[in-house]
Image (cartoon, helix red, strand yellow):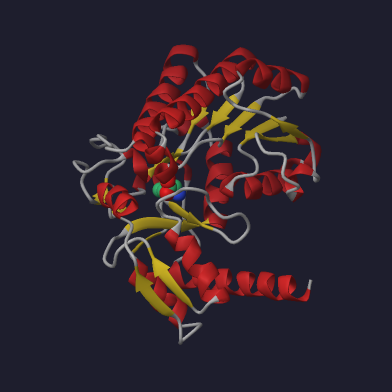
Length: 318
Ligand code: VAH
């Protein structure tokens, strides 16, 4: 069975639904520190779990005969920068607990890394799979440490650990919490509800982005790939596009011509964004397990706006 931590988060809430569809609802145990009434808590096994409690995690994993762990529970970059010690304890404490449970039960293991694992001295464009990683944020320190720790568990214990360096993820189901790339999600919500958006990230600030369906497919594809063919494990660069706020606004205007984009740059999140690459290279993922993003910017925009429009109409008629 599959254990997912952070199941009520931006990735978790959609990944649990996808995994339950593929493998069967009863095979996917969703856990989160929150108990909110999300559909995930009703469509299959759900347990309340604080990932800093390793004993509780081991007990749940044993009771549900878990053989795969997808560890998503973490604080994102902006929140981590506001509360660095909480971020260290939760992001690293939770990860080492999950790795120890996986080691004890012999589970396959996935946890995401991020473009945040790169820093100002990393090549900014076509960022290679193997390159310098000196991030200047606590989140980035957590992500690089996490990559090294997962590789350590692979080399030392033979644990089948795998990871993806995610770009900003865009989705319409569950908003992200406390990320630097959140502007790229908020812009779509506001385009539908207000016809305008004020961006906290400045014009010309390029970052990698990906539509959530491509991110979910990448996790399943990587986890089902033949491990003997993987030259890398923690963690693969993956991306679908490199955009700045202007590019997203231009794409939105193809559907909503009157959309207005304004700026009120947040220095803290702008500084985080500027420490990250403009565009990373995903060749290794394509070569080693066939990664290929399906959604480009305009296809993502069309789907986001139609899905959010439908949500808005349902909410209005509710
Ligand atoms: C964040 N959405 O902004 C996350 C992600 C690449 C960005 O790590 O912190």
